[in-house]
Amino acid sequence: MTFVGYKEIIEEGDLILAFIGRDAIKPIRVHSSETLNTRYGVFPHTLMIGQPYGSQITSSKGYGFIHLLQPTPELWTLSLPHRTQIVYTPDSSYITQRLGITNGSRVIEAGTGSASFSHSLARTVHPHGQLFTYEFHHFRYEEAKREFEEHGLNDIIINHTDVCKNGFELENYDGEINADSIFLDLPAPWEAIPHLPKVTNKNEKVGICCFSPCIEQVDKTVRALTENGWTSIEMVEIQGRRWE
Image 1 (cartoon, rainbow, N blue to C red):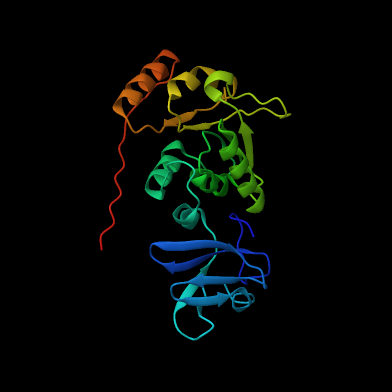
Image 2 (cartoon, rainbow, N blue to C red):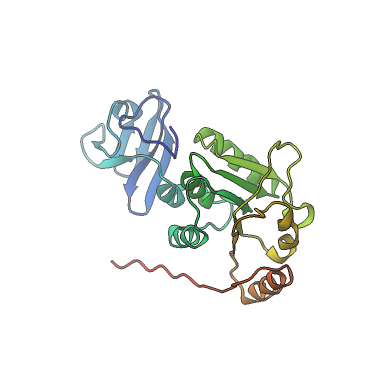
């Protein structure tokens, strides 16, 4: 089961997202010996195997139901285990569009964090692009690496390093990074910006987005971008509001 393919029928070992309610989406790995317990009833995994994705199934006692959804980056964002504050769809979709990221893009992301945006980027650059994502925190790196392997995201190269101190170059990577899009979600992106010329595309337009919650961070980042030759700099705030 991958986040970049399509599948119709649920099989043993698949990752599914059990839609229990609007505020409760639970990722589970389907095994015939296991059971999902919810406030709406008990759902043996045997009830799920062989069902089409999107199916509604009733609990074993005949009351209550859940929906069995195929994983997508948008749904994963709503159900993933939080290791850091995450990038939600209103922001990730805008950033992807403004940076012009598409199939074949070569993207740098730092830091990986809870890997919400990583999943979205991996789907967008697939199958001819590449995502290079960097995480300095060892536990978050290990968890994200495990998730990428389990989700079949082979377009992601994850690196355990502090890009602010060590830069973006890779010791165990044979090719050139040659990135055309950069996303920095760091406490101090201005410290990483001077390292970027070594890993960016020299023949094409390169876009960068620095994701910061505080105006003090924005001020320092804009200064660093200007000092390092970046142009057409602007600040944008995205607000997503759900209406009931």
